[in-house]
Length: 329
Ligand SMILES: [Zn+2]
Image (cartoon, rainbow, N blue to C red):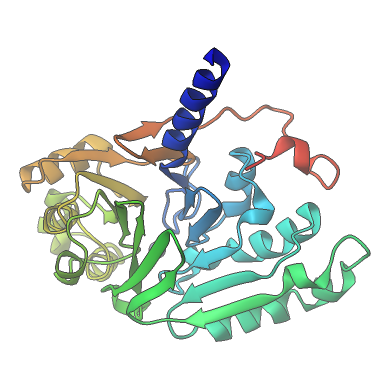
């Protein structure tokens, strides 16, 4: 009887843990070249499935460092087709296939233009699509399924619903945000977008809103005309398509977010403290977090942030050891 009770308790705890949504901030940068931020990529995990949102530069590297079970990452959702959101795709799609023997197609969702982009990816890698096939690396793993999407529910199974919402990203349009819903929890990933009232109209209230930020200081913006080109032109153009800290605060408020998280962080001449203060001053009272690469967040009864797992100096994930090194989930 005692044994039975222990089993029941352990099972209940396990279910509680599994009820969480885990969000890995794999890459938290924009297109800029920085030491610690690779291109934007956010992986959302629920029991039995994984969903990758954008695939910036270095996404496979960061997944490996976090020991993500690579062959199970087969659902990729693109917010738009700017290079900094797709340039990690070739390695993610190709290298994870032949190293980890992925034996199912990879599916892509994205705005109009995604079919052409994936056709281009296939052409770019056409040599290896054929050459790397062998008795253990099967053609099915390099196949692609592409769905071009606009608005509304774009993915639904027994536990997960994903909806696309129109975003406003200037020369990156057509662009979408994604609302991810699972087990009574919800996360809005804005992708790249300047302020739009649409998010608050469609997605409210959410547990977490994950927003981009572009943060040239208010002083710099006020004195743009006195600065030499290309600074005025660039700052004005980028401000038209990304979110300032004040715009992000407005979107956090309008989506009813308990927690506002920043990724695709472009600090320009500001510090993290400057951004936090500007968000507070703009009236968002919830928790604010500026994500760093490979941090992860769990969303269950509570929302918690966790430091990245350490990366051993001799980490090597290869065709022989991947099953032992990668997480077994
Ligand atoms: Zn971007």
